[in-house]
Image (tube, rainbow, N blue to C red; front, top):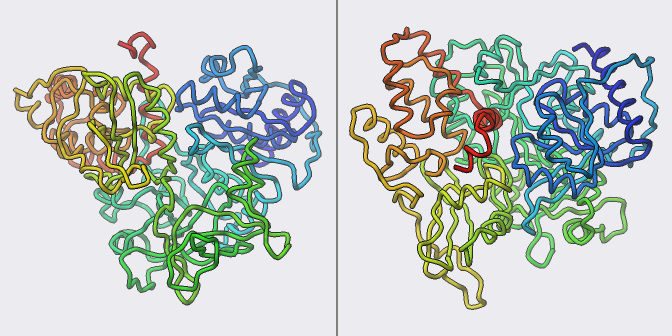
Length: 601
């Protein structure tokens, strides 16, 4: 779309929203497939003076319903693909408008609403410590200032071409959409649709992308041999909050000499707090890289437990003083008051307590040292473990639940749930995961469940998490009994699955996802399977065979087909380039092809 076409489409959407919803700065939910259409809907909602509330179609139905109710949105803007889902979310309390049915011409400048800088622009729902998602709001002034910081920080211009891989329900999307579109740059949505995967590196070369967010480099470079067309890249950023020196060394060898790594510390409540840019000449003397220096309009402080500033070199909670902080949490004045403090000197700035721990070098460079509370990062997603614990306590038979993050296998960090149960036998992992999947997104469901007779306590009666046992590698208790592999193909697959999932054994009828697998790690399994058996199979079909028995049968059917070395390398490179967002969407697409009755069974 040209900017003229985008503006015209957004104006049509704005008029349709105003005709349906009337004037005022009220929330409007958006449930649309990742791509140009969702950007039209977002801009249309903003032009109508509304607050956009993005709903990720891959989230469980009950979670979407909660977000809609909590936001108080009376209108959902959707597309053909998600029309049925939109009506299920809306129930009888909310109108549904199909954006693809909006017709008519709108005169230039036809957006009728006038928006003030303090008007709210969006509500983004993040994991909540109360057991329910919490909505973070922000206004037009802050979005514009965040765009200014980003533009100046990376010298974004009209010549730039940005890949757009993030869900619109994440704060990272705000830092892609508006810096690109408000600078006249080109924005390229990249997603997996209907099982057809166009590898990210091939996509970068074909579209001449200048800035790409690539996820974790160690998951991407195994099949990057330097022959891919990446010359257009001038900036790359990696998912998650920690970048290691070893990853920088890999980047120096495989990416163009002019390409720069961008590292940011960000929060939904603040936007980008710090920034660090590293070029090929940068000398790295530490194993874990810092997150950089404060961006324009952001002052970083480190506080002790009493809320007093700490000197350089001391570890404390990262706090941010700025005029450009989020107004707070939607309909949560208590939480807003707790996390956002007035400046003690009576200035216009406020202070946001991030809950992150950090240490500052003498030159002002900040090092991120993890979470102060129980909030953790899982595959780049911010997770409040209290929300997962609350969901577990709703499962029949669960008496107590403690969730923590642990280092495990290829995942680095996974969620581990320690449970005390009220009945024998205890709920199986299959039961637990099926129950949690009704309300939690995939990244918030524990990969490992450990049954305990008791939980270790501190003298004050709190659970002593440091004393919880290592989960080990034992196969979890599933609904079905363990059935060992017998054929050569089954034995090879069992070994691959065991290695990737860090388990001592895997039965041929065990579900990959019940064993703790998830959509991103599934691509690693598929990559190993294709490389080991030299197959040419559509990835979607492999996602649809989540047991060794089914996968072995499919492999046996396709082994007669030969595949050339270049074609094998191409398929493996595409698999390695899949980001978490794309893998989740692929899994969601495969799952939706199963009827609700079949899913229950």
